[in-house]
Image (tube, rainbow, N blue to C red):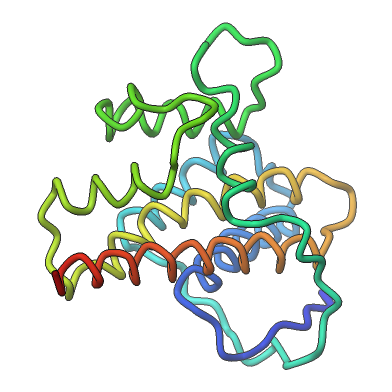
Length: 191
């Protein structure tokens, strides 16, 4: 029914993003609204580890022409560019949700963010501050970047037709961020 063409070797972040998209489509098929409350409920399930069990067998490997114009750094800087002022009329619903998430879960990190912030270092500082062991770093990194992937997909899902290429691109970026953070963390442990 949905013509997805994804590599079957999906990362955890990829699967999380697909689970979000899948749940939205299921609700729509059943005549239910995938409104903001429903989206937050799904994201909450993902954050808490209650992942939706999706059937990955329908995703087949195929070559996709994905633009590399969006780098992880640009993706994150753009995402945080309007989080400083809650009254900013230009803030998107996705940014407001991220702001709310940070305000609830990570006030220290939120206070450091500005347009020129080194987002990678802020995340890395949090990993070190929380003294997360190496065995838990993947879970922590995906915990953060699942949010980034979902926020990007909120925009994509609001379109009339789901943009598969843009969806894959968003997930690819989130996965690349995971890799950068994990590698940086392990290098610090080796010092």
